[in-house]
Image (cartoon, rainbow, N blue to C red; front, side, top):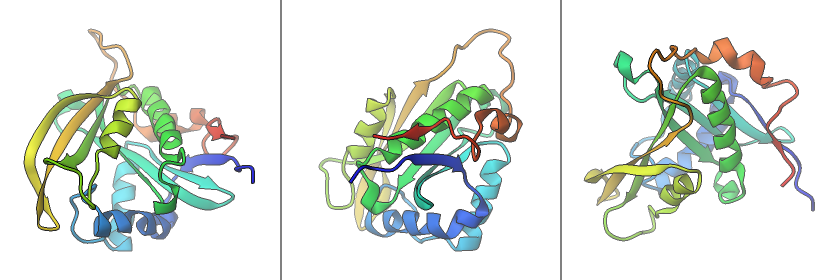
Length: 206
């Protein structure tokens, strides 16, 4: 059967329940996130609201079914880090390796570029020595495939499921770094020019 278009739209707190359904298995079954407990729907909605004060929070859907989500946040709170953003992407368990993550990332990158963000930073959990049933190197390779480069790795800094895991930092430059750099804009300032939730420019028939 031919795959239907994937639409990328701006997430709302009304999506919190479905996004928790997507996120929950990563908390319970993997070391991809170092969170131990699935947050409440209220807590998750508050996190979304906080993100949307300045950064994109995007949702991928097909025929009304939410397949995954992606968002960005501050790399660090100090003012000089304002041109860098940390990114996160999660897809539904049955949508892994189906192209949804790539579509979300492309839309996220476009949004951040429009804001004037120059650096995309990803904090990726990775095995200490060998892959196991909780964590592989797939996420690391996913980011490398998208043009990120490894800039550092912290060893045995995360403990979950009775095992120690590493954390790698990767970065991707998406703009020119120049003197007199203009300050980044908040996502709400540029969202209309992206035409999200309207005639979506980020569609795929693949």
